[in-house]
Image (tube, rainbow, N blue to C red; front, side):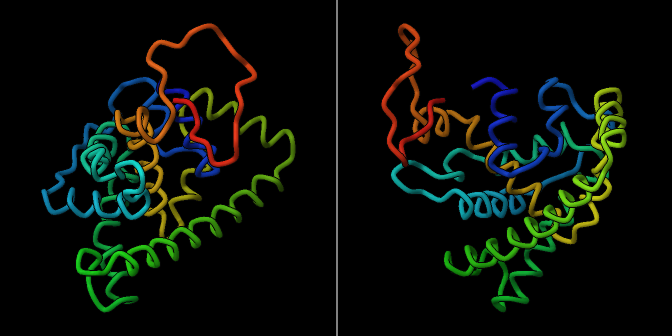
Amino acid sequence: MKRREAVQYISLLVGGTIVGGTAFLSGCKSKTGVSMTFTDADISLLNEIANTILPDTKTPGAKAAKVGQFMTVMVNDCYEAPDQKMFHEGLVKIDEASKDKNGKSFMESTPQQRHDLLVDLDTKVKDYNNKINEYINSLTPDQRTQMKIQQDFTGSDPLADKRRQNPVYYFQMMKELTLLGYFTSEIGCTQAMRYVERPGSYNGDLPYKKGDKAFA
């Protein structure tokens, strides 16, 4: 799966623009020059968050794909300084949210408690993004055109500041990176999806049943 295809695929899954997606496509580091330090404990926490989002089933989950390590690289190489800061602060906030809901840290919580917490956070993300979509729909055609021109010209997302106002914006970034990291990993591409190393002639009418894996 190529980078652009991966970003487009994950954008469809999360229903919006991926934070740092432009930098990821270009393969370049962000212009901030900032590199935040992630401890081994941070990576372990990110792996458990990712594995709660994409757990082990018939195929290995996100932890096996080392998505936690992938997140740290993406945050340092592709995120702008405000997003880096919010992502880093999110590691503390997700523990605080866990203690408020379950009376213990995320790492100390049971798999079901972790799942329920992330479902709550995901619901808040979706509710907030629905408001963003309502705002976009309220724009005139000229305003949308100007926004698109600005995005194409500068490579930045004009709606980024609005998204950053979401109190649980950190979880949106974590979920996006979990999906992006997993479905661009060897495990995600070759086991979670149907992988054909040497495809034959093009066949545009292959049988498909609901629930079948997508092709990598």
